[in-house]
Image 1 (cartoon, rainbow, N blue to C red):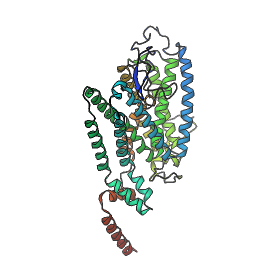
Image 2 (cartoon, rainbow, N blue to C red):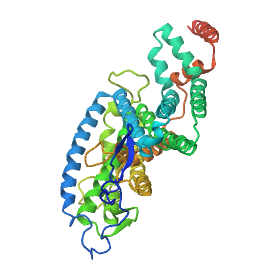
Image 3 (cartoon, helix red, strand yellow):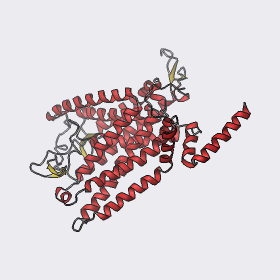
Image 4 (tube, rainbow, N blue to C red):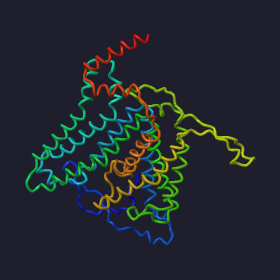
Length: 426
């Protein structure tokens, strides 16, 4: 979540891409790096008095966001998923508007709807794949709804492909002379948004239903790293880190890395004590969860007698295995994920924009806050699937395969044969 604070002030009177067909004046980067190399050892941010006001605004908005985030965590999986969907829609809106041109849009009525057609098609495909198991477990008690959902799940890939092809044909039919270049650039831009933004952020939803822990810990580590980098750089920053973000410093980067690693180890232990956070959600209900925490969240004792002096008060310490995994997440959040922010900074500088939007006071747009989160979400998902998840069959997995691959008649036949086998067993 690296905000490009090094971008310059807005250039007066310079038009930018529009929102809703109206010209909007967006702050542009002057591409001039402020007197970083002229500071002669002075702190990069501490001597800039205007940053104090910016820090207060940013702090207030951060507190409001944290309060809302905690409330949604308390409400549960479905509400967190809804939050992710809302954020994705705002991000898509910001990015769709980034390269819009009002004159061309007026000549292409309905062209904006095509962007959203592709967006919601991608949403149907992605969430259909991630949440099909939870959906099946939710509707098994209703026979009619069960048949409807099983049919949708079985043919979901075909439905999404048909919707995409419909959008493709729509695009070709609406091509207009003298607008070819603009239309094809918008078509490519839309697909880049879906690949780089929507696809990556959608892994967050898979993490949520694997257990809020696997969503909350990575997201918290990104936020901690961002805040720590800001304050370490504010008070101690002297050495520029990267030219893309000239106000980012090595002091802020190193201080944030240490803080994030320590926080990962401590937070993993704290969150691991709450079943509401560690239990996976196997349906789309909102009730409280109770489950066996398993060995991952069961503390193990480690003796310290050979490592510490005799005067040390503790002879052993209890550590959850998940805390070691937390260190891996902390390492990625502090070393690799910030490059998602640097990528966003380079992109904004290339198009001479200070922020992707202005939805969040002191922070910019939703895209400015989510750049590192997207990188982290993919890593957390892949890490969980590779090193944490137990690879075994479950009732939910088998039921999902039955719905996807067997007809209704074959399902009835399977049901009767299982009934006979169970009757013989009894």
